[in-house]
Amino acid sequence: MSNRIGSLASVCALLTLLVSLGCGDSSGPAVGAGPDDENQPPETLDQRRARWMTENAGLPHGVPATFELSGNPIHISGKGRVQVDSGVLTPGPLFPDDKYYLFFADAQVGAETGLLVLEGQRIHIAGGTLGQVEIGAVKTRTHLEDGTASPAVELSTAGATGGTKPQVTFPEDWSDAKSALFFADAASVSPGNLRLSGFTRGVLVTATGNTALPGSVTITSARQMYWDSVSHIEVTSSTLEYGGFALGGKVSEGSLTSPALAAAPPLPSAVMGREAKITVQPGTVRSADTFRLTQAVTEPGLLIPAELEVSYDATPLTLKKNQRGLVPVIFREKTLRGQAVLSDLQVTGSGKEAVRVALGEVETTVEQLWDTVGEAGIAAPFLAVPLAIATPFIALGEWLSCVFSTCPQAFPVWMETGTVSRFHIIVQGALPPGSYGADVTLTGRNYAAFTVPVRFTITE
Image (cartoon, rainbow, N blue to C red; front, side, top):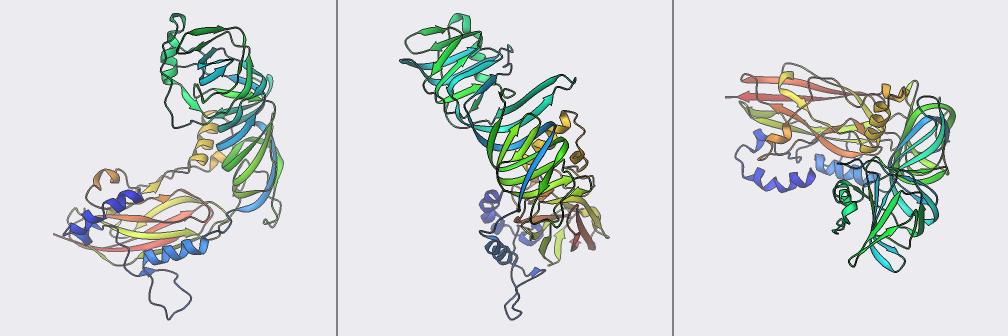
């Protein structure tokens, strides 16, 4: 969005209604905490935001911690990496014929190289390695929903980008594989002397012909793997590396410890963090080493408090009837310890009907965990922390009307530790001519409420 704002800056400069349209100018004096030296001139919002970013540069986020949790099931979301040397590949049914296909592009099998196609619901890694695999989601369980014992760890591959799918002529008895490949998702793997067994049939398609394969095959190397998005790798144990993650589920026992916490916290049902190595076994997840804890959800609520510092441009707006203005507000999560979560947004005052705030999407890793566990019908306590708030003051559809003015930036519902950014309060000149005031109050689940006063005049 920031690139779009920059590209529209020249357009805004040409508009005669610059002030009333609110083209995102942040050159006015910032209201809020400023430099310690009172002899310094007042900061603009841009200057203050730059100072905040400089102050945060290079500092660690989160607090050091370790955990070991047990439950059935427990899910992990986030993009991770793992070495896969054993396990079972379980392809999902591919559209449109619901066939269980697995494809390897540029697969070297013996002296030939081509597209390797395998069909089967459980294909075993019998030797060699699948190599480093990018993982998008993990599920660990001890039992199925009906109570049947079924210990397993399921690793779902992350969608890979780049490269093109092979274009080959399939044998007549594999004609439906062409459509399946079109709808298949890429997975980043690096197989080495990978021996697979247990598939029902297979074929290697090359430029010079096709080779039918028996129930096992050895892949010396391959460029890419393709299969359905619901496919997964089933293993008995694995240690994954994450830059950022969120985990949670039906946690029954365990502990979360950190020297930065004054006391041992209650059992968490969800944990978020960075820079982690996580060992996963059926029904158990634990940190293989110290990681950076950024938030956790326990029975009382969010574990780590956050603190927001806010500055805004207090210059009153003057708008013509039905024109729009933007009040820029900068903010930062000051502690660099805990993610900050919004609880409520309210607007009061005589001009409240003209004032709205855009709210941003929740960070992908957190949203995926909430969606996965919620859709599975798991009674996890962390789901009591909603990722959306109910209020009439949320801006909708503003991005459709900002072609010739600044697109409003949104305030995050779930904010990462140490975030330094901005959002806009949107004022629409939809009231009768006159002078109005409104107070915009945002309240956090784990940070103090703050209020931004907005003053504006609407003319004919």
